[in-house]
Image (cartoon, rainbow, N blue to C red; front, top):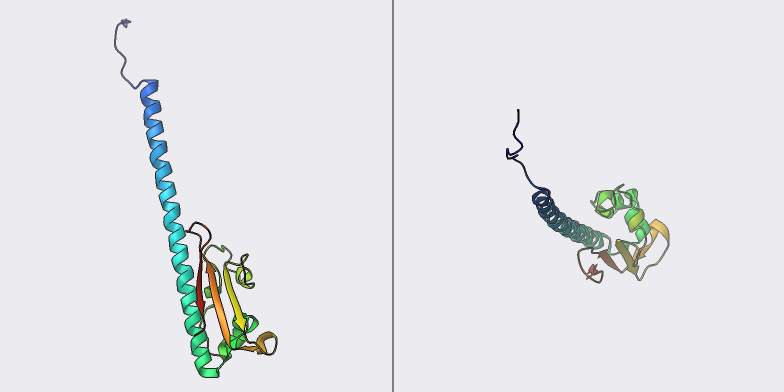
Length: 152
């Protein structure tokens, strides 16, 4: 027969609740920190992409004396003709999961990447320009900062 006075071992409900709350707080801190690290990594990739594109545009300018218009920059055969050695993935934003160029086709606040040209003559892939501005909207800043590179 079992005596009613035997002490049962285990944790009380209060002790379990305290442990659950502490684990929840730690998990929240880890998730918030990890999210910030991912944002900084994507911003770093955006800056690298913009610098690589700018370097290739300057090389094309040194060869031809002009910068391509947006249509020419996004057109693979035109890039090949101008010897712009960039994979089309360089134009896709790191947060764009499908890797398409749709997010980069337009300049301005709605686009994550932007390419605006100045002094252009002609249209489409045959247009030639005398200047450009490349932009990338950064996500790990308050107020929506933009990273910009311009032609020399």
